[in-house]
Amino acid sequence: MGELKVTKLTSKEDKANYIFHLLKDIEALDFMINNDLIEKSPIRIGAEQEFCLVDSEFLPSNNAVEILKDINDNHFTTEIGNYNLEINLDPLELKNDCFSKLHNQLTELLGKANKIAENKKTKVLLTGILPTLTLKHIGIENMTPIDRYFVLNEAIKESRKQDFNIYIKGVDEINLLHDSVMLEGCNTSFQMHLQVDPDTFIDTHNWAQAISGPILSACTNSPLLFGKELWSETRISLFTQSVDTRANSFLLNEKQSRVSFGDHWSTGSVADIFRDNVSRFRSLVTTEFTKDSVEMLEKGEIPGLKALNLHNGTVYRWNRPCYGVGGGKPHLRIENRYIPSGPTMIDEIANMVFWVGVMMGKPKMYDNIHQKMNFKDVKSNFFNAARYGMNTQFHWNGKIIPSHELILNELIPMAYKGLYKMNVSPKDAEYYLEIIKNRIISNNGSQWITKSYRNLLKTRKRFEAIQILTSKMYAKQQKEYPISSWNIVKKDTMPEFSPKKIVKHLMSSDIFSVDENDSLDLVINIMKWKKFNHMPVINNDKELVGLLSSTDMEKYISNSHNGRRTISGIMQKTIVTINQYSSAKDAKKLMKKHNINSLPVVEKNRLIGIITSKDV
Image (cartoon, rainbow, N blue to C red; front, side, top):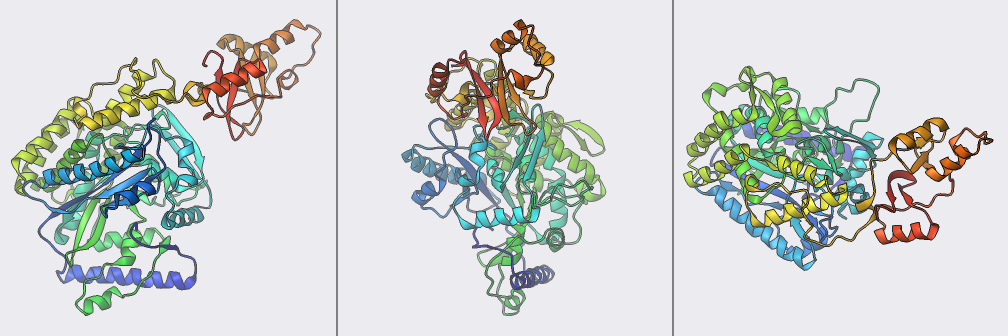
């Protein structure tokens, strides 16, 4: 979809024309499969690298379009967030030192991006979810200013007819409503492509599904979102919900999400997977069509299946089948979409070597995997891996096996055999698979991030801890040592930059508040129990309407003739508040000016924190 000029499907004529071409594309694909027109060899690999742009304080840098223009290289393209870019690497034959070559090209292209970014006082960062993202960064104003993203946003919102409800529960939890698909822009991945023989596509796709959980468990790198510790690979849950066209309902809704692992094994041919997608998911956008795919085949031309690829670009299977044309020849491939960006380029290439090796090294005993494993076990494996990473216990071959044991004893040896079968150089195979092995016995990305973040939280408030964590990720990435060799960040680590102190750095977000209708005696006791000097008061709409201080309470308690028993009777209704992005100096000045010791921090009149004179 990314390369096409798209418009929203609105008129009956547009819909009819689009459906005509979509059905013709499926007919043409069937014809090419049945007449042996799709390339079977050589097998090729490819990859897409998404990355983040950050400023000197490691916050999102909203200048991707500007940097892309200066890079001036067709390997680069935009993403939905204007603080992300993507690199499309050249396809290579799966043989010899192909992975080293891929690594070298990625190093060269990211180096080019780094050089241009530095001129804009911007840094390039590889991470599944940028830890320093806040709600401020996922507004529509930060969407890349290109029509197709706004068209997709409007189409999904129109289909859904309500805001997006995001709920993710891990160690912490997030529960929020959002009004655009910009939450998709939080997710950054390293998408891996493997060409597949059309004759064995279904069995190969089912195998890709079967191994997804164990592969993912070794590669997780996205445990944080908005400062909350959630899943080991939070992207899996976040992306599913961020582009969900299904409306919330009181009824049992059994429709699949557009981002899906699937509900059953694949059968038939690859065309049947596309037919299933078209049956389940209505088209959201369209583009201009000039040729009928079936007529092209009759004339001896190879069609691009434009309508089918456009539809496929809005259905996000974690193992997505893809059709393409290269060098005038049509081919099929599987796109692995569940692996996150980072922690380093060397880790990403190792992830790819591991996945491709296991894909190609499948033993005979796992042929027709759909007859040997229950799909629900496979799906459970995948989501458990996303939640728990290397702590997952997998349903595998009739047993429950810990991830470490399964990967070290079965999958890594399987990967070696698969790579050697494809004549990949032993040097490449051993070098990159050793990186996976070392990671399994030490830390993967999500484990390193979680341990480091917990340490920093012992001495710092959440936002400052996240900035320091992100700065350390960047520094270690620059040295290009694999994640298994990274030392955990210590609690007393100092930042290597000078952050401008803002309220968000200093405020407490774990706050107590009381309702304006709460019992006054109860509130008095809460403040005593918790040793609070200030208590915010909210109304039924969760808006801040007052503030109680210990001084107010003392006056009330000492006045034995005071018959008022409601909070609203004694609370301060004229409240001085501050925004979370205001400077710490401004907070100090406000407290001094109004002779107060605390400031509620509000966003759209909703209480999100409190900052006191002790904090500043």
